[in-house]
Amino acid sequence: MGFGSISHAWRALKSPNFRLYFAGQTVSLLGTWMTRLATSWLVYRLTGSALLLGVVSFSGQIASFLLGPFAGVWVERLPRRRLLLWTQAASAAQSLALAALTLAGVITLEEIIALAVLQGLINAFDMPGRQSFLVRMVEDRGDLQNAIAINSSMANGARLVGPAIAGVIVAAFGEGYCFLIDGISYFAVIASLLLMRIRPQGTGQEAMRRGAGGLLAQMREGWDYVRRFQPIRTVLLLFALVSLMGNPFLVLMPVFAAQVLHGNATTLGWLSGAAGIGALVSGISLTLRKSVMGLTRMLQVAAAVLGGALIVFGLSESFWLSLGLTVVAGFGLMQSAAGANTVIQSLVTEDKRARVMSYYTMAFFGAAPLGSLTAGVVANHIGAPDTVIISGVLCLAGALWFTTHLSGLNRMVQPIYREMGVEPD
Image (cartoon, rainbow, N blue to C red; front, side):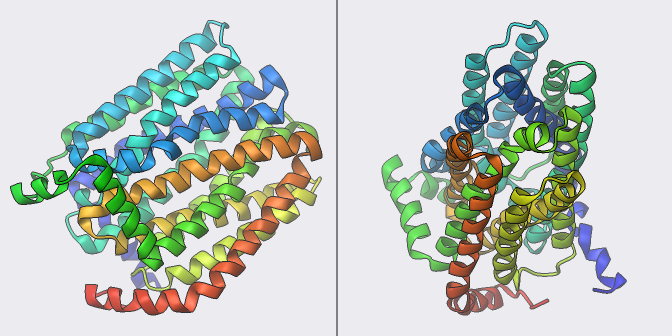
């Protein structure tokens, strides 16, 4: 790709609302990734248990899985900006409560789990709300794919920097200050949302159509759409498998840092930062794409790359080799997540966007906790390295399964993209 194409990499930022979102979310995500590392280290410091790492991760994400379809319907009925203001305020309160308990030295595992469950409930509404609001922040619908890629780059730039900062802060001052910084960082997003100028959402007829039918009827309509539309169904199934099998290695990272590599919180920060480097490279590579054509084949490659990296990571006892493999695994994991998001958002009809993205949320925050809990149980019996090796093998199996569906999926997708005026890369 020549230098002339680099100008396309940030084209979504020409939309003022998306620029505001980019600025606020960048600050907030730094705090979010600091909290993720600090929470995992706090749990491992208090318990020394791989199983309980899995339990806490499961608790923080299972609500998003259980409430996904219900949340998707409600998000379509509510003004998105107002919903996001409430979810960001609630997330700030959750992080500040976690900070207060930790800094006071009275935090217990039960309180960590309870607050994780609360954040999971918030995320069940926040994530489909943000994903479906993204299309309203960009003025040109053709920039949506670029906005999703920039959003991924932003998240993973924070994923790179946040854990590294958190590792230093945890080692020097303790976990509580990471939670405090996170709580304060949410106000940047709240400010950006208040400053946006958003056109009224749809006409009166569109609003009536969104509210037509009961809650269960609309949930069924969304499920039938996902189940019957093969491209979205196939992409969601692969992404769910990658989330189920790929994410647990991040949950087990404290075990690798302490037991396999004989390190501390700083070691964990390096490993988490390495995963962030891979994910950031993934996000940047997606911003450089001019169209969504070819993304389905990229999903196949990403799942295979992730599976291979996990297998070798599970076998490694070298810090530097593990660090490099974590970069590769982070790349594969984020290519799968951002690629699936882009393909789904480009195909779904507007009146079902929030409902379909709620199923993406279920795969992102639902399959992951089930995998984390399973990984914690399995690691408790056979060890973290063998658990990660098994996860890698299953990711490779998923890539092979997706390969058998790829040609048929592309035949269905390409006419849709041509009708939209999307040109091949």
